Amino acid sequence: MKQISAIRQSSPGRFLVSFTDGEELRSTLAAVTDARLYVGMELDEEAFEELKKSSSKALGRDKALEMLSRRPYSRRELKDKLLRKGLDEAQAEDCVDWLCEHGFLDDAEYAGAVARHYAAKGYGAGRVRSELQRRGVERELWDESLAEMGDGTEKLDAYLARRLKDPSDRDEVRKIGAALFRRGYSWEEIRAALRRFDAQAEEE
Image (cartoon, rainbow, N blue to C red; front, side):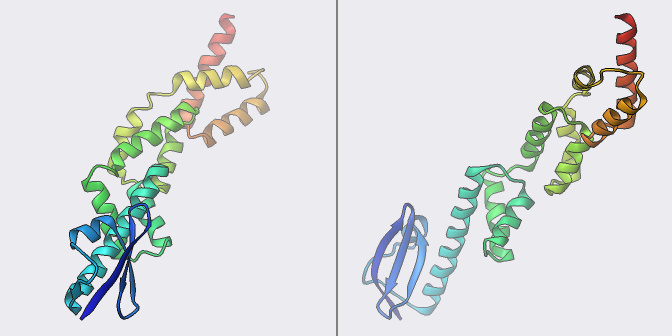
């Protein structure tokens, strides 16, 4: 049997449970209250192991929620981050499952936010696809998020208006076309934008 000698708060929402044999266990307010712990309480081996498991799970979930409060993550990104923080595979999977179940982690919403962010910065769909793949978002969620970007015509035209000074300069056109391709626009979109630019220049 193990007997609790002290229960001390170590930080907001975190507790340290001490036992008469000198062992200490890090836990959370939720785990402590769920187990109805109190000083002098005795735990058999099975109850102690259950407390260790519940405390580990609660600490992992708190850590995941804390990380998610700092910046958004995709499911895979957050799981990978938790693994790097020392959680094992099962703990990390439990954390992201729990966050998804409670609506804190939503890859569809995250994909839309990524698309809007890069669209606002003037990037094309190709860049967004690359980012979504890098961040581990499932392909089935890409189309809906990409639809939120629109066709990018205005952004392309504005970019050319700012950067292209002489449409007859083939080197300049080639460099700008390559830059737009790196920003995620297709060659078809770039050629169409250049045609619009030429037409506008002729009208002027």
